[in-house]
Length: 125
Image (spheres, rainbow, N blue to C red):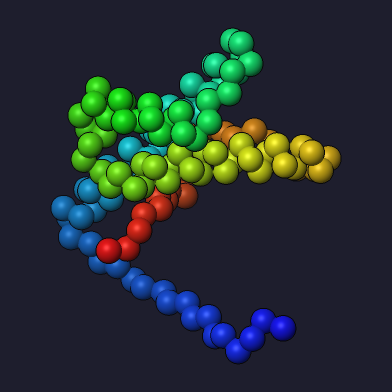
């Protein structure tokens, strides 16, 4: 039995200011860049010599990348780390599905700016 706990969900409509809209768009773009950048690196490394770059290695490299690319320091750092976690989860889901024999899961795909679905994950403060 699950007990008597009641779970509640809330929906909010947000009306951001123009400055907030700009910051949100920058965060979308930065998260998409980080995801695609490390997806590309992981694919190239695996094709070259079957090397796997995991989450911890990507996270450490992201610190160096932020030193090189100044614009990556502007958005929420938690959102950028979450992009790496989502990439790792995508690989984990793919390999778990392969072990089960489920053909429905494919390798992670690159994110597109033109896709209508854009999101990022962060923590509330």
